Image 1 (cartoon, rainbow, N blue to C red):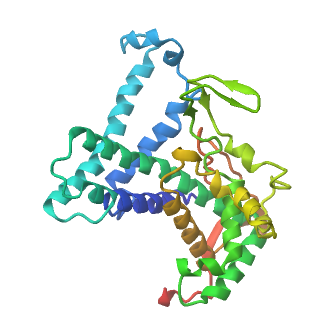
Image 2 (cartoon, rainbow, N blue to C red; image 1 turned 90 degrees about the vertical axis):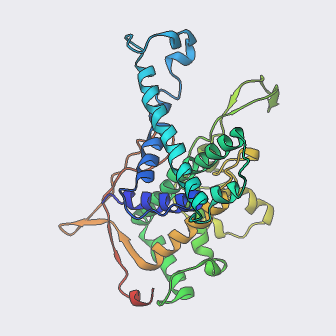
Image 3 (tube, rainbow, N blue to C red; image 1 turned 90 degrees about the horizontal axis):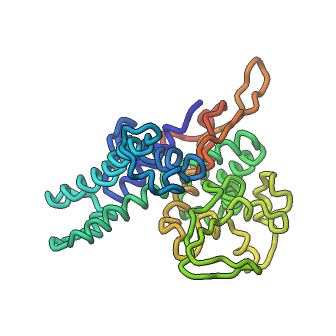
Length: 343
């Protein structure tokens, strides 16, 4: 079952509504398709070979005509530029037009644009690209986290069963979990924490460039160096997380002092760090909790059964930057006790 299209619909719909006030009503949505195609370019095609192209090493290659053998990167760049510029401009211009006609849904763009009819060209440029970067930074990472949660539940039915008991005890059968329930669900919180740690969406953080010479643990790092945070290594630190390769939400329920608990919380590193930390962390993290809690409340997830035998899901990770699982086999169905008429 390839449920990733459904995840894309949810992720794209939420993000497009927040950023542009655009409501996605089908999987054929123009802006959603642009987003999917553009993030594919950014996540996979532009990072071929570790993100280094021959022209990066031999800058003179940029002077080759596009028809010259070996200059295929120039032809690709032209097409990718058109695609990404359309992705940046079309939803932004659509929102601007709705603002002018007075029919815009409140969004990041509409609030930032406001009634500023004297916005400079540079301010307009900054706003459209800032908004787009917020979309690009959230769409696949959120989808990765939810997909890995589903995979974890398929592989660990005992965790799903325990989470369902907690959710049922708090919510009952006549409504969906809401944010007011969150403080009452410590195990659900631990499940989300373990999903973020165990299958961190971006194992290697975005590179940062040093603006001046620096030194770390005796290593001299000259100005201009690229520094990449190894989030995967942090999440697999055995001194912080015993048996790190096992999925154990209970590790986050063990009694420890507040400072240690804060240090071990994966939210403090999976979203980046410092001034370049994901600016949408609060929206994304809250959205993840809500989706996961509602899946637990309403759905039963288990391994696919063939001829009476459970089939282990076979998963590959083919994205060069994000840890997004490939489509895998499993079974999902509504929980029988849920009162769907009241939801």
